[in-house]
Amino acid sequence: MVRKNQRIALLLLTSLLIAGGAFATDSKARPVPKALFIIIDGVPADVIEKTATPNIDEISAAGGYTRAHVGGVQGTESQTPTVSAPGYQSLITGTWGNKHNVLDNRVDAPNYNYWDIFRIAKAYDSSLLTAVFSTWEDNRTKLIGDGLEAAGGSKIDHYSDGYELDTERFPHDEASNYIRDIDALVATDAATYVKESGPDLSWVYLQYTDDIGHGFGDSAQQEKAVKIADQLVGKIWAAIKERQSLRNEDWLIVVTTDHGRDSKDGRDHGGQSPRERQTWIATNSARLNRHFHEDPAIVDILPSIATHLRLGMPPEIKAQLDGESFVD
Ligand SMILES: [Zn+2]
Picture 1 (tube, rainbow, N blue to C red):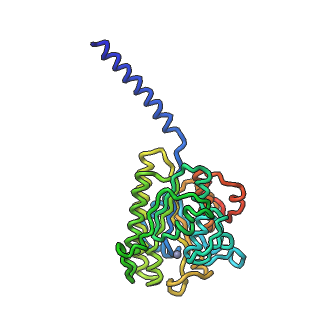
Picture 2 (picture 1 turned 90 degrees about the horizontal axis):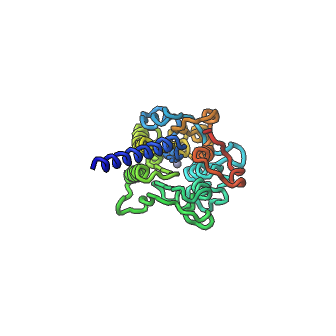
Picture 3 (picture 1 turned 30 degrees about the vertical axis):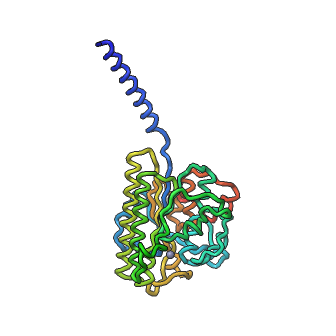
């Protein structure tokens, strides 16, 4: 009886040692890189800077905050309207409008020869888990061209979008409260999915700030909308922090906007004025290089995510990028 107990104890000790050894090896393994980017629509740099945004501030404190720009290289062929869809496409393809050919929100004929970051990720490793959480369905169906042959045919693994088309569940009201509610829904979905599944590459898009910008311009209402967006960012950031505390993962979060607004009253955008071109980027990356603080552009986000995720890409795709990485 005693001998049997001793044997069990020895077995237990051995398995503990093995488990301990495995754990020690595991904790030394390189953490798995993950990336998530958030576009908050149409928030000028001066507005984000003067509004209390504790969650975005916490992300910036871990990495950095910088003013940035959209709109291409002014006065050259790459000059791009400071309009939403052209901005998103510049982010996800790392190129300006003269290449990706999304020059307005109709998105009639994107040039899919300029691969988006999801296609690059899937081509590099088809097992990478991709996700989109968006208040505008076209981001996935048209800009990414989800599943379209012309866009490479690969599919986004998980998405939460299209709610703006469901007028029964979200009756459209003039105050855009339905957009505010859809933003909350997609951000909550993103936080839940991050916690449960830890997607390798995700895009979150929040629209309410732009609707309020068009309705009220520079105003207390706009600041309130920005604070709401910051709370939603906080939910996602909390999910990322929880994940990182439990697992050997290295998350990059990038929060940005797609354009500024006019300097008259902030209701409009689309032109090339300094305030319309000026944007901002907040990120938790602790590996920011000098370029981050030298007025980076929205097209620099793709190469930065690719660097963080250690994505290889076909040389011809890499050669046509207009941006450069702001992380090392
Ligand atoms: Zn916009």
